[in-house]
Length: 78
Picture (cartoon, rainbow, N blue to C red):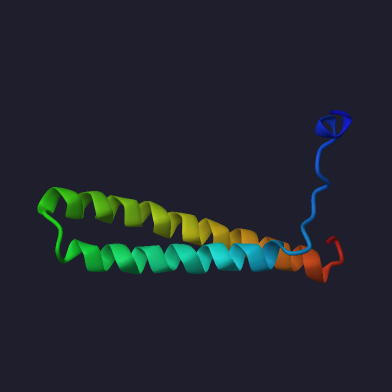
């Protein structure tokens, strides 16, 4: 039980790779949703469009975070 009180150490060494994988996965979901929209009714198509809009915003934010992590890595902060 004593171990449950200790927080895991923050390991940023693989953040760039982890974020890259998340971006790739999200981009694939955007593509899948775009294909689904071709066969969806108007209500579902609109829902997918809105979801893709949020996904694209997330992708942009993740790319900025990845840049920050790469900069930190180059400066030796990680």
